[in-house]
Length: 311
Image (cartoon, rainbow, N blue to C red; front, side, top):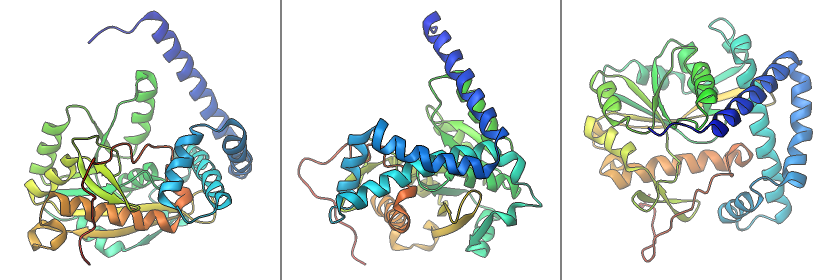
């Protein structure tokens, strides 16, 4: 591996110090104050700074072509508020959520299904997307005493990567680096463990093409390969914010089991479309809690149109 230049290392340290100072400030403030600031800053980011403005605008126009420009702008502003509140929740999570207090913050829809799934003596795949507070959802599984091995891309800044990983693993979750993790994932599944994945990352031209909001999008084939090759049931879940900070609905969106021979697990494409459709339905409920900053429709097929399977 090529050594990092002195300039890069200095920039990494500066960014790390800035983030740690910002987190300390957030932790020192009352949560109500953080919430008010998040609402104000979201308008500033959406209307003044306009970070990734064109990407957000194009994504929302693709997903909601019939919505008015004002409605799409409101979703964009809500997205920035959601992302800022995520930072606040992550900063305060260790102080707020414990085994004895999580019920104050969380409502679980489909608890019996979820517990039954997690206790299976079989390999398991848990899927979510860049929707709601997926970081807090993975954190909560650790609070409940379930060890989840989540696959995540390493941050370019090694200091920030270590800091984020320490938070993610503070309640029992284990992080597997995205690059080169296939052997580790296979071992976890062989030992009847649970793998956590995000199912809405653009996979480029080599990915599996699915329909997402009426347009072709690419997803990683590895997700379906892991599940189908090990006959691991797949659970799609979401954690969306309700009235305010630390007010969440953890929801089982659906479970598919290859061992039962259901249509959604017939092959790689069917499984990929199944979980993509569930994620889309979840996003439509609260579109402001989705990460529209991603270039989700980066790759499109030149000829064929992707069609949803018949209901």
